[in-house]
Image: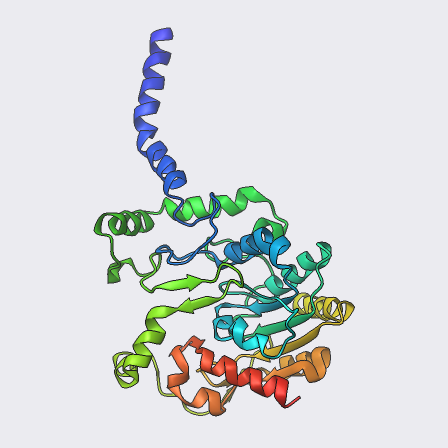
Length: 335
């Protein structure tokens, strides 16, 4: 019996050793940057979880910088630079980009609840709402790129870290990750898990800068858009979203967002994104948003001067800081 157990243990060690090695390498390399402390998350070659980065940076930096002004929303918030926003704030206001990839109303609501429970005053706020993303889910996501930081979701550490470990152990990720480690540079076949662009994240404001694309546009604008002409599809004029997206769950969250903002006497602006698609918000949804936020709501969805010109976009999903700057001029100077 003892001999059998010895052989069984030896067999199990041999059989599971590749997995154990991969798990040890996961903690050693920390590809998603969720198991170790980092002061700077810039130039990450693995596509990161922005919710985790934003929340971690806020927690680590708040005592030092005393943030009181926040930008909430998805990756489209990259168009709203803290330095540009600061022009409309006071010298005692300290902005922070509290964004997340694929951010929804759920995520914005959870972040404001977190700030409220932490007794942090929200003096100013920019809330960026997108027709195609903000009302996509009224619950936490489960995939590794969009799952919420446990402090924001309140759902505990286990499921959060398991999402990353599962993503890491997929054959596609292992191939892309270790090929990058060996080659040392990005290749097109790595698209999805590996980041081919140089992206910086400010260590104070959490601002994102996509260096490569802005540089490419400034050097040769015509060539940039010629190379991407298939991305910028021909639109057929403004359309109106025929499907209402704001259900009872979302309505509750919107009311809670408004309550927290009013409780803080926040100077806030709710901006409906100018997306390349030129689809206007559903009329029922727009009425609800206008009822909740009144004159603090600014609708740039649909067809307008911002959405007409493709040079205002990196690609159809993300508009550039030149548009963010123009929107700030409109919402602060005209109102």
